[in-house]
Amino acid sequence: MDGYLGIIVIVVVVALLAAGGLFLLFRPGGKGAPPVEPPATIPLPEDTEKRPAGGGEESEGATTTLPPPAPPVEVKPAAPEVEVPPPSAGRMVRLRSRLARSQSAFGRGLLELLSRDRLDDEVWDEIEESLITADVGVAPTQMMVEELKTKVKVLGSRTPQEVRGLLREQLLAQVNPDLDRTLHVAKHGERPAVVLVVGVNGTGKTTTTGKLARSLVGDGKKVVLGAADTFRAAAADQLQTWGDRVGAEVVRGPEGGDPASVAFDATAKGMAEKADVVIVDTAGRLHTKTGLMDELGKVKRVIEKKATVDEVLLVLDATTGQNGMRQAQVFAEVVNITGIALTKLDGTAKGGIVISVQRELGVPVKLVGLGEGSDDLAPFDPEVFVDAILGDD
Ligand SMILES: Nc1nc2c(ncn2[C@@H]2O[C@H](COP(=O)(O)OP(=O)(O)OP(=O)(O)O)[C@@H](O)[C@H]2O)c(=O)[nH]1
Image (cartoon, rainbow, N blue to C red; front, side, top):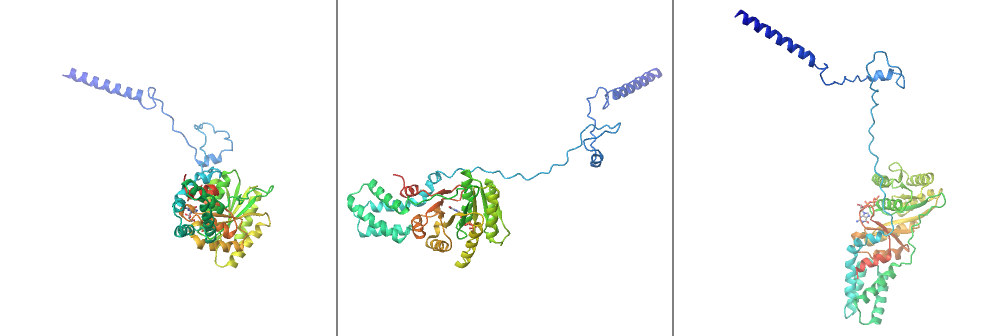
């Protein structure tokens, strides 16, 4: 028994010794263990600061070989992506379906009336009424009806094609394709062209200024915007957004500040930056005619200390009818308007306003707004307009 006990003791001792040996052999860091990366010694910021620039000598026995950590990176908000807008050419053709949607009922009605076998007084009255309802204006309506009466008599029986041709000719004559609708935005040597945008708030004035800037950038021009509508802080913000999107600088002033001073600064900026065009959005409050005259007069005068005002664009909301026309007349009396930007033509069947506003103000419609999208402003094309009214052949 003692002999067995002795053997058991010896076996246990040997087993313990063997286990100890194995532990030493395979302990972490031991020979057979996978290499464990030494823990990186990251210098404290004060260590880094104490070290001479360029790294300097390492103190003897230093174990760290890692480079000092990079200073914390400041995360800047991503710059807004600058868009490349499409050029202005052919836009009205692209937007023709919008026009057709809003105007073709008027055209179809006229075509139907003119195609009737018997064109008695009652039918002519209806034709007249439908032209007036479409805001063509009384005088142009009467002129058109007289012309149509004469032509119809000459024709006698009429095919649908002939009726369409007749009406197209009349409408086109009233819209007047011969008017010069060029937007004067050519530079004068080193000096940028200046466009003044005027009109009542709410007509889409700021939106039109932004869309115009976009369209000019799309045509390869460098544009500076002046947010001279200092009475409405949101207008400047709105313009800033338009400008940022296409990389056009926006000059703004303090809220309630002097619009003329913003116009002056914008012109100066345009000259310094060698811009092609400076577009100035004005406030156009219509409290009193003299107030408006003073404000716009001053804006124009200060711009003319540095440059020339090449275009004064009146923004008119096509949906406002006669009321809009009256406002337009006030603007025409206080400032020399050179072109009309007719907005929201997609939202009204009263496209005849193109005819009446040109006639009343003696100024061509140069631009039309056909939607809320950024590129929904187009150079006005009389033929595309009339064809959209009449619908497809
Ligand atoms: N459908 C349509 N909406 C338009 C057009 N032009 C502008 N708008 C919209 O009309 C709305 C009114 O714009 P406004 O509030 O008048 O903006 P604004 O005239 O630039 O502002 P102000 O600085 O007050 O003159 C906006 O939602 C525009 O997107 C257009 O041609 N068609």
